Length: 164
Image (cartoon, rainbow, N blue to C red; front, top):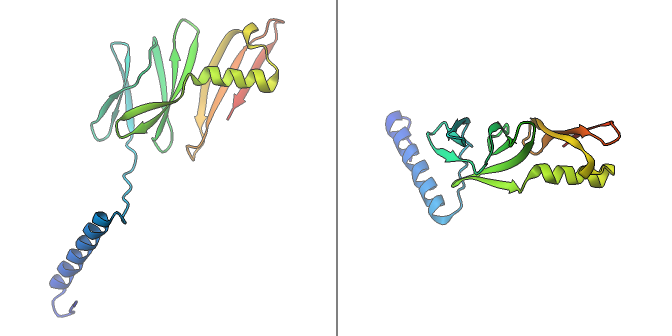
């Protein structure tokens, strides 16, 4: 019972009660905690892309290229990485952060998006010269990524489209 006569004892009793309730809830599996996603810094070490979070954890992202252009989502749960493979050839990989590191969510997202362009826009992707891909931005909710595809068509036209 809390008493107004001794506020220190009252706070101690309340704190103990809260701790015991949380411990009991965890034991029963009824209390869920949410740990916020960490913030990330990216570095390239010996041609490998590394991510280090504000907790000090380091992860090597499973990418292979000459240069990397990572863009974390606003909630830091995802990272889109533009990868420069050769002088003007770039690809895209998208990863989700898990407790064990980063897991690729779509195998070669660039190929997937070019296939969408082929299916939806009737573009003959085999005849696109200088194909390029560029991450524009993440949606503020982190639910989608805006990506630009562009290239030259064989009839000297230009193809450019933003995918969401």
